[in-house]
Length: 554
Image (cartoon, rainbow, N blue to C red; front, side, top):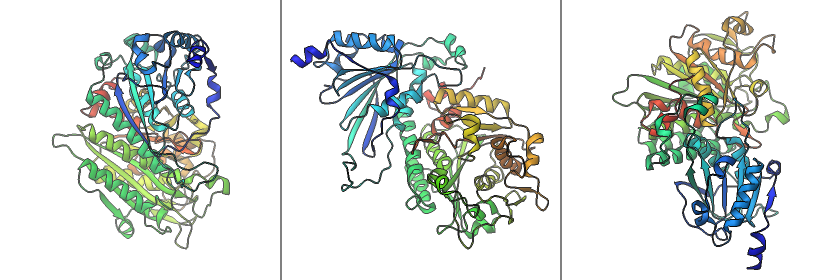
């Protein structure tokens, strides 16, 4: 009791900067559940973190939160804690040692960052994790709830391979649960939406409530993001092409949509898909094009998402350096995001024909490996002179987008890939680089990035200025820029893919290069799941996704 009296008048303040260096734990056994409203719990038995923007935290009364804090924390300690974090946004305080914490998100937000402050939220959550069952009370506006839920979900990665015999106490933790309890604060409505570069708010985002269906959407999006990250985190000696196909078949079975279409190995060659076949023919497991489809009876439009799924990228005979090859198990992040986002969309009941096209291969070294100077004919019929076997992603995607157009009759095609190292140079660690032949789709993607937390930034679309970099004397094009590597490399890589659809492609095409945001440190983020879910949310029956979707971009 003495400790309680002392602690209730003495609060430890922790600067936000301390979160950056904290090593995250293995979280393979963490089960996450989202709820609306707060339920009683004792912070001594179930630690709790309150997190939100300072202005939103200050709106909470003691009666709102006492059920999560009593009998350990007094009203005086709570009020003092709120005063600390609101006077210094971005700080954290402990209200009860290792039991109850209060953290505020940064106050400042630039126009190219997410209003939900989702990246800051993820840092806070990773830094305050406990090894027991715990709760997070998320205090936010309804417009920010999806980005925040996904941010929390990706903070608890699923994959690990630690054994019970791991040294230095690094063994896998016991199974535990995380309850994310959501407290919605009133929204400022249209004024701040315009200030944040978004369209006026949908009325569904102003009702101050979360229905069971909306909670299900949050759960689906967070779970799918964790699925995409797990696939991307899993090493290639486990997650080879065979295993990735198993993952796709498992998703299809869970969604009850019928078995995927699988074109594999020599059949790829026979059908003229020289891009996927040429990249993957040297590997022990043959390459594959895998298609999952959802075709509602009343649908009149067709959308295809095409994902790059290089389960490991050695660079081929243009082999990567020792240090740059580490982490290339993550080169399947685009296909993982497409597969997981497809699961979210199907659960949300799409109103369009929706296809997930997974271009799966391992870019290996061996007697059958593609050589520089080889010429491949892709599914488009166009020939490509290989001048860099480490520019393989655009080859598999080119076959994928042409299949989407020719065989699936898609009018809107989005390709998603960890495509170029130059993407990180161009748009950084947090924003994917996007290229599109349609200005409206491009603007919608940027807006969806702000809402979803999966940020995106547009690159130049100027085929007449950039595509000449692929000029070949002996084929229709080379697969990597020939001379000037300073001429918008990420844009050029996207244009290579569009060239196989044709620069006169009458439909809408969007290229998402998410090489850098696909990872945070050594862990995958599941980037792309939330972006695609929001970007095409207007084409689902989900109330929340429809409200968040950028149907009208300012």
